[in-house]
Amino acid sequence: MTVVSDMPLWTGRIDSGEGQGALRWHQWVKPLREDQPAGAALIGLACDEGVKRNQGRIGARLGPSALRTALANLAWHGRAPLYDAGDVSCTDSNLEGAQQIYAHHVSYLLDQKHLPLGLGGGHEIAFASFSGLADHLRQATPHARIGVLNFDAHFDLRHGEQSSSGTPFRQIAEYCQRAQMPFTYCCLGVSQSNNTLALFEQAQRLNVRYRLDRQMNSWDIPACEALIDDFLQDVDHLYMTICLDVLPASQAPGVSAPSAHGVDMQIVEHLVRHAKASGKLRMADIAELNPGLDLDNRTARIGARLLASLID
Image 1 (tube, rainbow, N blue to C red):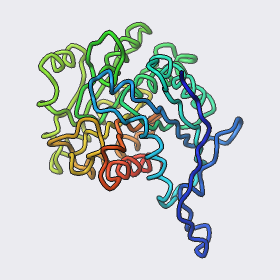
Image 2 (image 1 turned 60 degrees about the horizontal axis):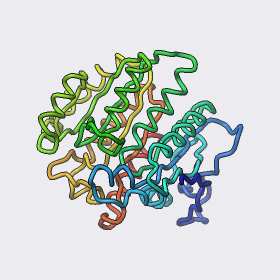
Image 3 (image 1 turned 45 degrees about the vertical axis):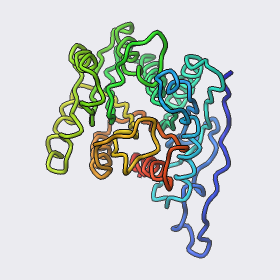
């Protein structure tokens, strides 16, 4: 069974003596209602099934609530509205049904002119997010040019009888083929040690642009920016997804597959902001947070900061 819940309770510190300039996220966010002014809208996919099918360590279903907790006490520096559209929760093994419902909600948010920000959950959220964005855009532009920018240690191009947290970008490629849309995919932070030769060959067949984790140091930033800029020239709309296992395990221990190398948080945040500055961002999400494996909420705090960087 798939459950769709309303906005949960947000709580946090209140600095009442410092006026409106001391607001935090939990004081600004509002439940989503119809016919509200356009803003950013949080929506969670609380699900373990994709990670389970991918033989990972389960616990990602608690990711959306942990991200909200980490966001709640952040200082609010924005001006636009912020909404919480609740969670789509997969409480059984019907991952595909949950992805369809989530995609429908994303498409609705886009119809209402909001910027959907997804809260994962495993990286199976990516296929659901892309499907919602593509379904929305194809109403007016059947062959919409959507770029998929993924910060990830893994290509997630696996083949499998069922969808999982390891298959979303292969599924997106198949969606694009069926819809006669270009498949434009860029993956930053790929670990050569954690992707088989078969996956690199699959990436080559699909013309995936990528950069290895060891090629994303502070001195590589201009080259990374150039890759993103070149990638964005070929698209009209950007879907950006951040798998938290792209970060080093010392920064992001709370994931199913912690990275031995990874890409430093400062570099990831800088490149996320760089891509956002293109003005083409239409949808973004955070994936693979597993609170049960987190230490001192490090991973949740980093996920929250990366989400905040998309709207401040």
